[in-house]
Length: 495
Ligand code: HEM
Image (cartoon, rainbow, N blue to C red):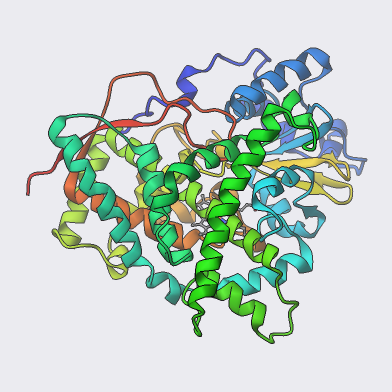
C-alpha cells in the first residue's frame, strides 16, 4: 500500500485564514473580466486575492522566517492559484498553476528577469550562470554547455559510482552495529565527492569539514526572510555579516585552490569545467575573455547549484524508500534483475525504469529547489490577475507538485504516477523540478544519472527502514534540505 510518508506537513497547524472551496479556486483562475461580468467583456485585470492588513503581513513574515514552503502551501489552499503577497518592502505574487508557470518560464519569459531576490544569491554565487540574464547569460551558457553534453555526461558514471562505493562501504559498520545513518550529510558528502571529480577534477573530500558548515550558512543567507540581520547593509560588521563573510571566504578559498592547481598542471585539452573555463579565457572564440573573478564565480555557481540539490534529492529518495517497503522491494527486485551484483553503468540506467520512477516521484514531493523567483519587467497578467512591473513572481514547485486538481492523493508517495502513459496526460508544467524554458537546469541529466546510479547501488547492498522519532522538519532554506536530518536504519541484504 502506498501511503503518505509522515512528512513535514504532518507537523503544521491548519491555516487560520478561511479555506476556499475548489469551485472558488476554479473561479479564481478565470480572467477577472469574466468573473466580474460573466459575459467575457474585456476589463482591466484586477489584483490577485491574498492576505491583507498589517496583522497578516507580520504573521506571514514570521511564518516565512520559520517555514516558507508550508506557508505558501497554506496560502494556495486559502486564495487559489495566484496569490498577492506583500513581504516587507517587496510585493510578491505566488504563481502556482502550470499555465501561469509556463507563461513566466516559457511563453512570456522575456518579460521576466532574475531580479532583486537573486541579488541575495550573488553574495555566494557571484556573477555566474544562475544570476545573470540576457546576452551576458547566453555567452556563459554557451561556454559551459559542452561539459553537459550527453556524451560528456555518459563519461561521468564511473566517478559517480566510485563516490557511491566510498560512502556505502562505511555503512557496513552502521549495519553491523545497528546504528542509524543520517542520510542527509551522507548524501551531501557523496555528491561533493562525485562533483569534485567530475567538475573540478579534484578530490574535494579533504575540504569537506570546512566547506560543509560554510554551505549551511549560505543556504540560509541566500533566501529572503525579512529578518533585521538580513536587512542590515553588509558593510556594517554585525555578527551575522561577519559569519556570512567568513563562509564566503571558505568557499572562495576552496575554489581558488582548485584554479591554482589547474593552472600549474596547464593541460592542453579541457578535461573538466575548470579546464573548459580557463581554455575559454585563452581561446579566440569571439567572446570576451572571462576574467579570473568570473571564472571563480562560474565555478562557485556550478559547485553550489549541483552539490546541494543532488544531495538533498538523494536523501529524500532514501527516506521515501525506507517508509514504503513495497516500493523498496519492487525497486530492489528490478535492480537485482538488471544488475545482479555488478556495478551499474550508464547503459543500465535505461533499463532501471522503476528506479527512475522512484526518482521522479521523489523530486515531485520534495523538489530540492522548491521555489524560484523572477521580477516582472513590464505590467503583465497571470491567470486573469494584474502583475505590476517591478514586482516579484514566485514559481513554487513544492506547491504546484502537490496541487490537488493535478495530482490524486497529492501527499502520497506513488512512483506509478510516472509510468509513461500517466506522464503523457499531465500539463508540461505540472512537474518542473528542474525549471523550464531556456533557463532549465543545465545539470538535470547529470543529476538524474547520479541519483539513479546511487539508488541502484544502495538497493543492491542495503535494506532501509524508518527509525522512530519526529517527522522531518522543514525550514526556510534555499533548498528543501530537512533541518532535522533523515536518520534511517540500514541492514545488509543477503546475497
Ligand atoms: C536534483 C538535482 C537538481 C535540481 C532539482 C536542480 C534544479 C534547478 C532548477 C529548478 C533550476 C532553474 C532555476 C531558475 O530557473 O531560476 C536550476 C538551474 C541551474 N542548475 Fe540545477 N538542479 C539540480 C542539479 C544540478 C547540477 C548537478 C548542476 C551542475 C553540476 C546544476 C547546475 C545548475 C545551473 C548552472 C543552473 C542555472 C542554469 C541557467 O540559468 O542557465 N544543477 N537547477
